Image (cartoon, rainbow, N blue to C red; front, side, top):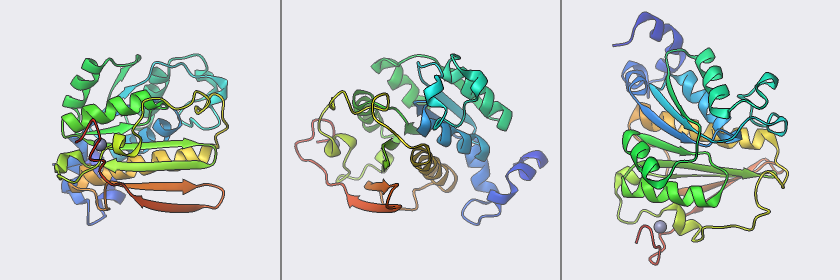
Length: 251
Ligand SMILES: [Zn+2]
């Protein structure tokens, strides 16, 4: 049952027939693990907190830097040099004090990640490096936990959901898509340009997919499928992901 305050706060999403009161209750009982508190995590966490997820675990070992602020919209000028997880927690609680937030100001080892994934209903990969993405993919696959992955660089973004909880035999994983652990060092935000709204669009997509699954019990779109966004052409492109029979993680 929802309280009057919850009903008032969430009435515009409760009004959606796909969500309703039952969906809102499910959201309020959900546990989301979000790894990475940069631009993707900024957008995703604000919408997840606003929507009333029950528990949000946020993970990042960085501090807020001046050069983050143009795209990492959860942070404020006064947050410079604060830990990202602490600054993000403060902003999310200011938005919705009902959300239980646990912050981990560190990089997780594999065993720590395994424990956190075990506790979570769904995982958002908002990280910025291939090694972390591959590790998250592997642990989510092993634990049959749905993974919502996104990335953005320059004017381009990409988004993909791996519905590992559905246990479909033909299901591909992130490593089927990118069968390597490292990309050339230049491919990170510190050296390449990146435009804020593209990162925000992708992070918002992650929140949308998570809310769908948590509130309605399933993803209402086809997964896994690679969604690519071109922020100059303002166009989305959709590509099927085929399972790699040689994949060392899922095959
Ligand atoms: Zn695979």
